[in-house]
Each structure stands twice: as C-alpha cells, then as structure tokens.
Amino acid sequence: MGAIQKRTFSLPGEQADYIDKLVSSGTYATSSEVIRAGLRALQERDVAVERWLREEVVPVAIAMRTDPERGVPAKQVFDKIRSLHQQRLKAGRRGA
Image 1 (cartoon, rainbow, N blue to C red):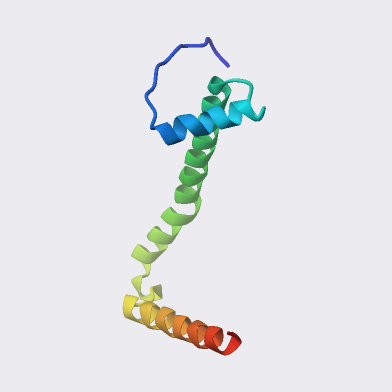
Image 2: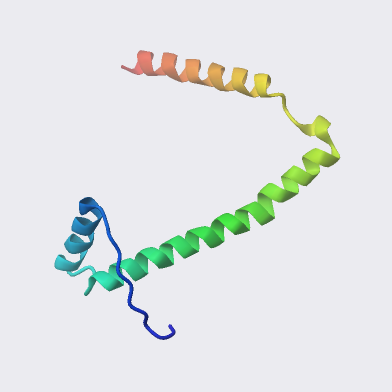
C-alpha cells in the first residue's frame, strides 16, 4: 500500500455505530481498518461489474444489434413472468 494519507469523514450515526461495533468486537483493530476493508470490497465490486459489462452485456448488445430477430418481445417476457408468478402463488396456497 502506498503512503498513508489522512482523511476526515462524516458518517450517519448508524454507520459510525457499526464501525464501533466491529472494532469493539475485535473483528477489526481500528476504524481505519474497517474503512479500508469497505473500500477494498467496493473496488472488488466495481471491477466485477466492469468485467460483467465488458464480457457479458456488451457482447449481447452487439449481437442484438446485429440480429434483432433473436430478441424476445417484452410482452412475451412479462406474460411468462406473470404466469410463473401465478403458478407459484397457487402452489403456495396448496402447501399452506
């Protein structure tokens, strides 16, 4: 990690209490460690989202532009979702 730079942040009470709880429980030694762990998790999430967009979303978007006929009309998708939902509701009533 490079040189440490000090920062000052304002947090809502709920988040400050959560940090204090993590430190007092021994999960983290300091509040700075909690913040660094949170930032690492945020960075990992951002990398995963970027990878998902690049590797999965963009190729599908390109394929849909190339061949729009491969798409499924929204009405058909929503009709299917509604049908599945109704089936689950009925199954839940029978199991109750």
